[in-house]
Length: 128
Image 1 (cartoon, rainbow, N blue to C red):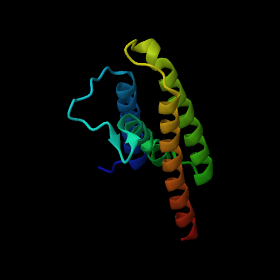
Image 2 (spheres, rainbow, N blue to C red):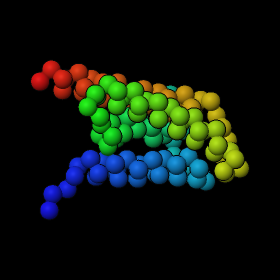
Image 3 (spheres, rainbow, N blue to C red):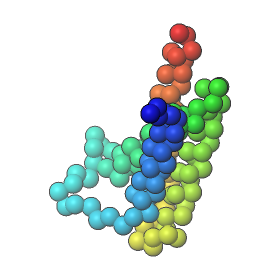
Image 4 (cartoon, helix red, strand yellow):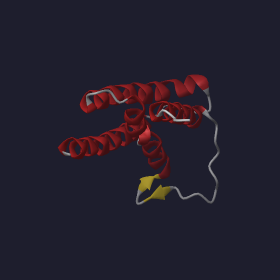
């Protein structure tokens, strides 16, 4: 039996988005042993960066069109919209959470970094 890798990547992508939603809307209390900063950056912002970094990578693998660049544009648009919606609505869904523009900036930085990684991969894959 042959598996369609596109379907597998789409499932992985949807599970990833569900996990990010759970992390954004859930209620978590930090461990007292957890460090507050990593290299001078608040750990919360590092988590937001890491949550959204895979979005363009997984999205491109799941929904790649013939044009690599068009796929990256769509994934960037989708990632930015989802990051903004998650950050905006987390207070309405969970009153113990709050909207923080710095969290949104960390989300967008993670998306941008993932996008740059995929752009570099796209450049090298087109040269072959």
